[in-house]
Image 1 (cartoon, helix red, strand yellow):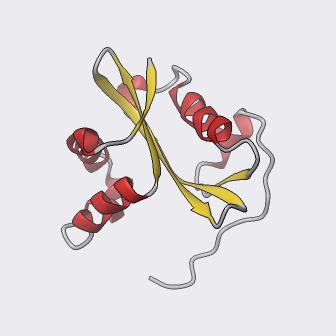
Image 2: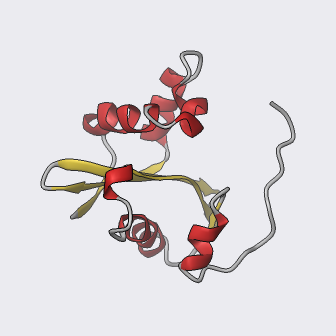
Length: 127
């Protein structure tokens, strides 16, 4: 298993994987998909591959060198429960050791299972 920096080479794998999950349609809807593809390149995005097979990805946002925010974490369903999500998070944490890393999540149980500390919440303001 390898954690690599995202390149356009992985675009089809990412989009195909999240396109199969209805909870992720906010990123794959025809009105936003091209912008999202650009964001994958512009953000701190990493992919997990195992023998050339895409397993998952994490996309994070750097906040003016003060903090890093995990925006998306996705593991392909058949690859779940193999510590891929944990490994992707660790990659971000290790690459930005001097910054606080936060996760924007609606999967609190996952982060609690990893013993991460809750730090407030996120509220939708519009949309």
